[in-house]
Length: 118
Picture 1: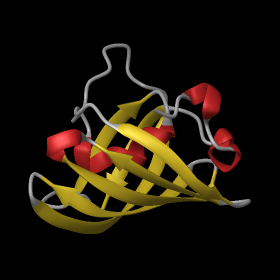
Picture 2: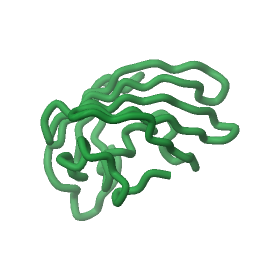
Picture 3: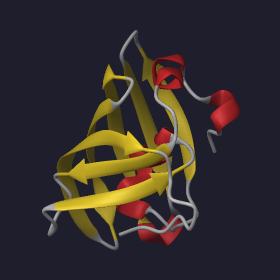
């Protein structure tokens, strides 16, 4: 699994914190507190045990593939727009069903003292 120490260089400019996500299926917007923005690559499978592999990177984009055993797999492209704005294109299989969507992630500040997902 990729960790913060192995974080691809384009994402090194974006730090963890409280992020607002739009484009989440079934929700207008979601606030997520994340320590490592690379977690957005596995957004569909958050909370699952997955292994990730860096496929490629450029000055502003990282491509990651991941496997989550019986829960499915995914292929995600994370594009750094600015250090506070990311675009995540993700697709794959989750619990036997296909998914394909684009998230817009905008850092809105530091995580609250009692960090929870909303």
